[in-house]
Image (cartoon, rainbow, N blue to C red; front, side, top):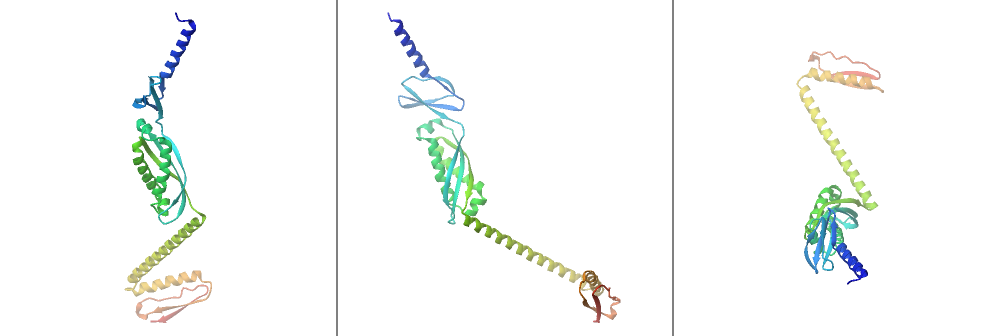
Amino acid sequence: MLSLATIALLAIFVVIILFSAVRILREYERGVVFTLGRYTGTKGPGFFLLVPLVQQMVRVDLRVVVDEVPTQDVISRDNVSVKVNAVIYFRVVDAERAVIQVYNYLAATSQLAQTTLRWVLGKHDLDQMLAERDKLNADIQDVLDKQTEGWGIKVSTVEIKRIDLDESMIRAIARQAEAERTRRAKIINAEGEQQAAQKLLDAAQILAPVPQAMQLRYLATLFDIAGRAQLDHRVSVPHRDDAGLDIACPGGKGLSCLCAAA
């Protein structure tokens, strides 16, 4: 007969074995099971049992992981040095490959993101980095997703957070922007002169066939000058006797009119 102490010890041993065999995984967790060192399946979520000392389990989290890529020194295609940092969002889609194919999928994905960030941005000019950030994000995400697919990792999003420039480069960009604005202003001014010249040509073509219309335009101009004159002005107006139009000087402060026969 076994003593009470032996029975108690056996009971405690059985309880310990049972507790070590019981596994409970949450909805976002999976367990990669190895039996005597060999992969035998993926368990979870929920309740299941493992054979103590024979089976081992590696727990894998399936939730999205947010990893901030440290600031990287990047040389663009036009030889401009910039500092860039980014953030990547990824998750495990195949727990088996995430455990078996790579030693530490978190560290491996982070290191791969750093090298990919430098490689992709190094193929673009500085202007493209500043203006086409969405396209660069998509390119980096595509490259990372293809390389991590074999690890059971899905890279869902890559976002470039900051692009830092040297002070000298910031001043150079400011000078470039100022020159561009000056160029646009000159072009707009030249286009305005061209349009005004065209309108004057059209008006001259309309007034030229009718001499009376030309003289009426002279009179309107004289009235405008008389209203704004601050100094003495002498205006010579050509007049034809046979035009059938009597030209009178409008009179005004500082304005005298001289009609010359044409």
